[in-house]
Image (tube, rainbow, N blue to C red):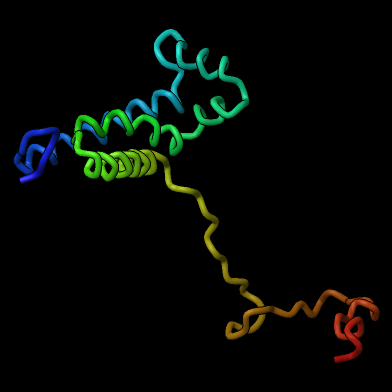
Length: 143
């Protein structure tokens, strides 16, 4: 049994409330941070906020999710300790949902050079002549 508000609610009810609250937190945070909104209302709001503290908050999904999750956590529970945990968990859940919706980062595959020895970390280039002063050991006193 889990407690919400002044009543005792079944654990399944609490789970449903949490999942719905996490989805709502993600939706509102995403709307405010990454969308223009109907009739460009959100776009104009972000533009009016400018580049100050509130403007940079409106551009940061993770930051916004903390502020959005605070009132939404009241839907999960009104008990102070449960509310704090739900608040942070809802923000974290929204951040996870946001990451799941993004495309994976592109990385370049590592290509092993075909020349040189395969058991060393550094490959020597024998066809590039080096200047006599370019020896790094000479600069350190001939070590």
